[in-house]
Length: 225
Image (cartoon, rainbow, N blue to C red; front, side, top):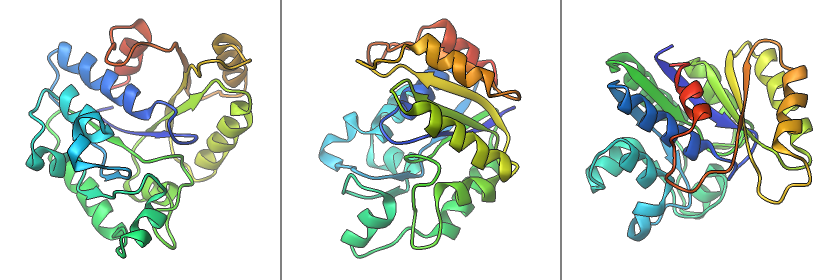
């Protein structure tokens, strides 16, 4: 597979960390990589270097310029909320057709590996009618589903997998990203999800220092590309 969509069971779970890890690993192997997070909320142009967009640009080895920011994340909103609410606050809206056109163009012109990172979880509203799930259905890429290891993640993860299966979306892998301080262990969480997941790899990714992507699990995820 040369194109993948990175999604999650919720927000602040580790999508961008996984995406950056994949970019870093693939580039180290000499692969040409393009990556986009088309929709981003909570974006502050004065702190772009710590934004998800800024982290992707850095992983791609590109300068953090306004043009690069616009290339990676063309739909940017200031409030750290779901896209529909953040857009409403700014008296605008997410153009669902434009988002899909952007992604299809990226898919069509890719030279090698392409990673598109979603926003929030699979059911996060983008506008008054569409969710991330609708977006995934429209572009039809295989997905990497990132989940946490917090108590409660089993229901969230298995529910997400059920929804994706019902819509005939291929899940290439589930990445269980360790949640600090959880009463549930990373290993037990991944093992349980694995028992209920027949058609996708399940990876247990321990909490790593920010910016550290040299890990066998990251390499294994990159192998999917």
